[in-house]
Image (tube, rainbow, N blue to C red):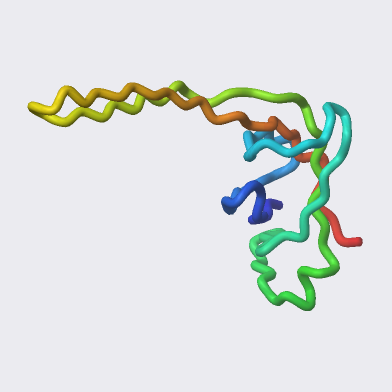
Amino acid sequence: MYAIVRAGGRQEKVAVDDVLDIDKVSDEAGSTLTWVPLLVVEDGKVISDTAKLSGYQVTAEVVGESKGPKINILKYKNKTGYKKRQGHRQKYTQVRVTGIAAK
């Protein structure tokens, strides 16, 4: 059984005991998150009707925080002496999916 959920601005395919990185949320480690799935596949049967999906719930436990890879941004214009260097490192929250079930 797996589900598709909208988490952190993206759609993620999740199953029980999956650990995934989502965009940072303000919840502490050990707290739980709940999502209403966009699609559920159970025993080869696809459920995509919004009326039936409102009865399903995906729960996840916050494991901790992590960081993405370092991204270097360089801007340069020839013959003007303009150079700019900037870096970015996205922050994520790690969550472990604990259950996909009907309410």
